[in-house]
Image (cartoon, one colour):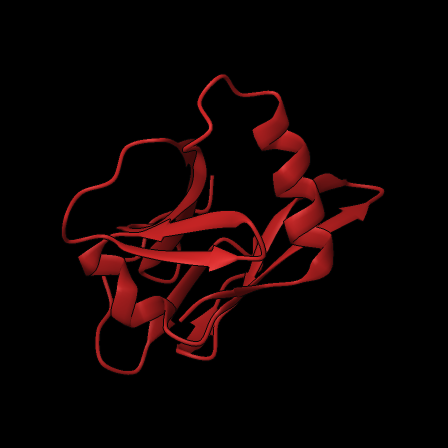
Length: 118
């Protein structure tokens, strides 16, 4: 299961309020790549697949595909604001290695091919 901090839920509610569809949720996914093997991705989306896991976080939806689900189990999504900008971040207990850019990770059981962060 994926959880969200209060800051992340508030930010997501604000983003969803700007969308036309009431079914919009935050799709969180993993893609092969990045300097540690896998990268996180997030997008607002109103479409789900029957194999997706959908988590309700106090009125906001988090959607995760089957491939990403096991690598994100127990993860927490936060929304952070800093001098470098603002955005969602993932704290993932399954990540054994992360890179300096903070968007790439590796798990103990699998790793993709390392690529540059940018």
